[in-house]
Length: 185
Ligand code: FES
Image (cartoon, rainbow, N blue to C red; front, side, top):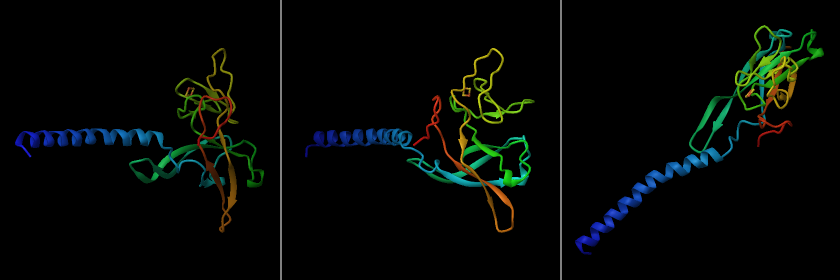
């Protein structure tokens, strides 16, 4: 091989290698954004003892699980949050009266917060308000941006061997901005 041809060959090989170095992370990034997080949906968790919830006082809890994308698998990450509401008047576990909502606003997915002195919830992003039952509330003449109520999660009271009653929740995410509750794939 002539020296000139050899140099051309080397420079093309270097160009191809550099292009691959730039392109591969980009392809992996795009793939990671397209790939769904497989471990987030349908995650059942034991959250808190029923007696530790106070009637009419919503409490927020984090849901831990495995977070996975094309690059990493990270165990014990916060994959979501839930609000638990022990409805006023539920004095015994038999009366149940515990409701679980995902903390994600059904408008555009911000985290809803307790609503100050009011009983219920408010979203800090566009001020959507919800009652303790999760339903959107009227707020004077202002428009409530919530397209539906807070997304309720399956919730069950389970008794352990020691006789303690626990609240268990099936965590799931739902599509925002729809009037209907549609689970994310
Ligand atoms: S994201 Fe909650 S009101 Fe807009």
